[in-house]
Image (cartoon, rainbow, N blue to C red; front, side, top):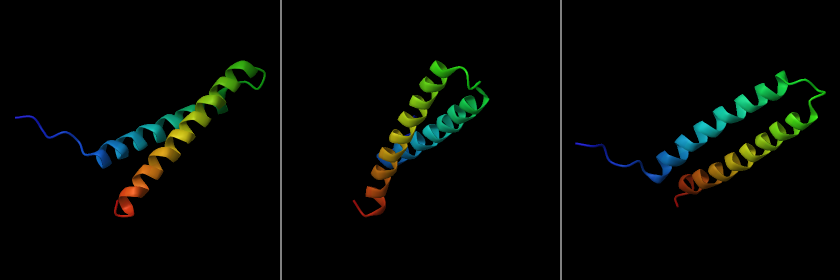
Length: 69
């Protein structure tokens, strides 16, 4: 028998964990990148900003559950 599908909250919590892990990885990659490599640094900075926006969105959705949505 298969397990039931995850709830929306469980899915959001899993997504938040994944984005948190990605964000840490992107920051470590940026820190290790030479300052002279501007194009790659800009791309990595964009990835960080995108992950931060995604994290904020997920956190706001989770806050709706905490507020008794």
